[in-house]
Length: 250
Image (cartoon, rainbow, N blue to C red; front, top):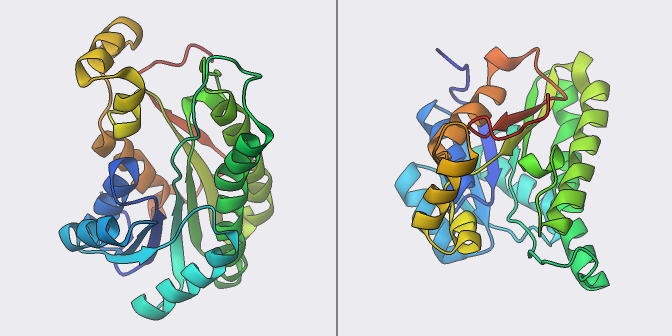
């Protein structure tokens, strides 16, 4: 299937590894001109050289730098950002849902809600004027079924889904879509660090995931790339799980 992404400028944040890198790789394979960003110059340059992308340094906590990042991408790639993928690492876990400090709550809100909103604000008006745009947020299955020990992620990622749903209704008639992709047990460094080992991840998935295995970043990226495509023009305001059947709710 031709996704209609050839030559379109795409920006993927948190893309030096894991899900973000897989999405950027898939978009590049589809012919998009891809910019990737993370806070480490060394890591983002290494990833960019391997996936035929252009690397930029940006920390998701730097809200004031979001518009500057978009401007730098558009200058370097000589075109407007037409595809935006907001991907941010998760906040700390904790067994006590009430055990997080105010500073931790504020940091989670900043990176999981305010950061993607700053990026969206930097690209959405021009997308609406041009009559085309794709914005995808990487969320978590926890927005549908809260996950134990992930109080901050459960709450803050849900807020971003609500914001995307609100904006999706406003921008739909202008040819711009905003969607969220919800990863379940995707084999990433974060999941490995939380579980302790790949063996533990696979053992848990075999017991709890109907597919009997964790998903790969590439499987997740395929769904995200479709939502970034010309073909997905009538899908907006959606939250799409990629979880091997893990979610129990309808």
